[in-house]
Amino acid sequence: GLPPLPLGRALGMDALAVVAEGIREALETEQESLLGLIAEQLQRFEWEDERRTSANACSREPSTAELQVLVRKMQELAVSPSLRSLTIVGSPMHDHSMSLEDFASTGFPQFISG
Picture 1 (tube, rainbow, N blue to C red):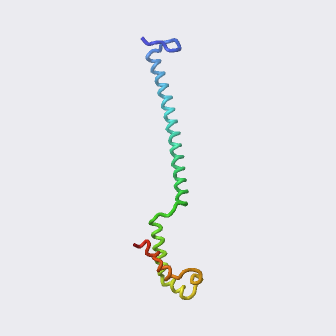
Picture 2 (cartoon, one colour; picture 1 turned 90 degrees about the vertical axis):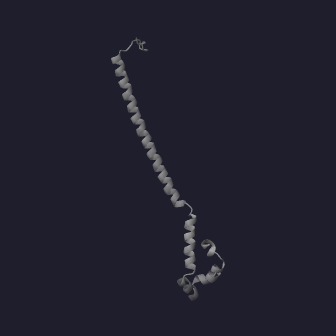
Picture 3 (tube, helix red, strand yellow; picture 1 turned 60 degrees about the vertical axis):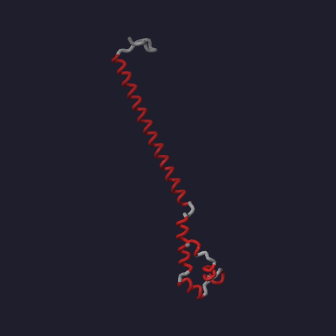
């Protein structure tokens, strides 16, 4: 036979099947609830990660490749015929900073190209 339950009575097979089915349904309901909560939390993590990524994208430092592109553009500007014409004509740059020739002679434009 079956040992008595704390209630003081033994359950038959039919009664045990009903109890087992009730427990199974309760566990399935709890599992669905937990899976829903886990999915919500994962979504919050994804939103937070996206927020951090977009915030960091705005404040990140430029990469070496980006700096090299910038320097190349500056080099192109430094040897630009249009800029040389402005310098010869007499722009404010001529009086307040080094000339393009002085800039080119510093070796800075060759820093990245080599």
